[in-house]
Amino acid sequence: MERVTISMSDAFAAQLSAFMASNHYANRSEAIRDLARIGLQHMRLENNTGEQCIATLSYIYNHHTRELAKRLTDTHHERHEIQNAG
Image (cartoon, rainbow, N blue to C red):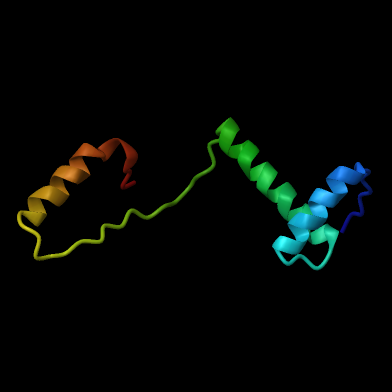
């Protein structure tokens, strides 16, 4: 593991301490690692690096609903641009 030293203003250190307390971090290293991961993930998403992402689309419904099969099919077709089966 590589050790890195950073400097920060007192105001930033206070914000970091508040973040750590509200999220139950045991030490600054854990908090900063998680924040760095979040920042790197955000950057990858913004820059669209082409990495694959997998998601699940779930419908929760009352099966006694009138014309349910037709309505589900219509909804699927209306939102086809956000769905990818392959």
